Length: 206
Ligand SMILES: C[S@@+](CC[C@H](N)C(=O)[O-])C[C@H]1O[C@@H](n2cnc3c(N)ncnc32)[C@H](O)[C@@H]1O
Image 1: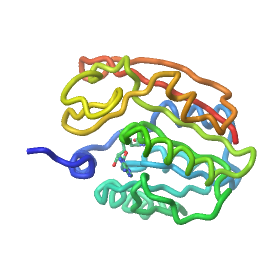
Image 2: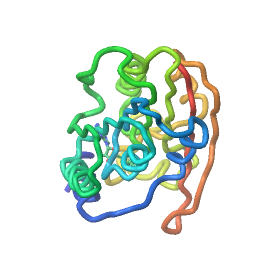
Image 3: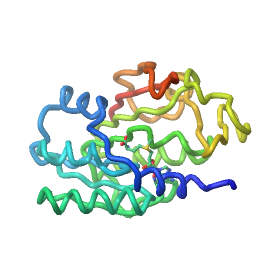
Image 4: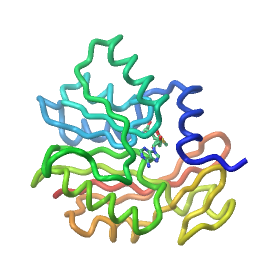
């Protein structure tokens, strides 16, 4: 049975609870406490990083198209008494926020699911949503990943294996960030469940 990306993530977030990601700590190391600054967590999943940002003084808006992810975040938010906006939203669609709404946009492993045309539209939308001088933290799966090349090829560097993943190179990340100033661009890898996970991460400024 071929499941849509949305069905895959609904099941995953029903089953999992995980700690804050290292990339979220990078934001805090770089920018310090939020002090009321606005942050959009795109493709937040169950919002483990959203909660981390909110508890560190950021005014967080967290979006995902997975009902189970957003429901888990809503429950956690109520339990902790956090003031945070959560929203079911498909990242490939225009966001219902005015230009320049956010000081920071954070996308951890949530923007490598789209074909080239949609990816460029999504990055242009991130640019629209950031205020001038705002910062974009983005980390995507890379072509070094163990799943690269597995399953059916459905586009350049894009494969359907369970669900669709579009693997980034540093050059590709550079090209989709063409409207930003890139402050940092790094490849990294880690060993996860016995497999290599490859990543490209960027910090960029509008
Ligand atoms: C690898 S998880 C990362 C979640 C979270 N950022 C984290 O690091 O814990 C990818 C997330 O992207 C979301 N996602 C994938 N495609 C999406 C889309 N088109 N619109 C909104 N969310 C999407 C999934 O539902 C999932 O929660």
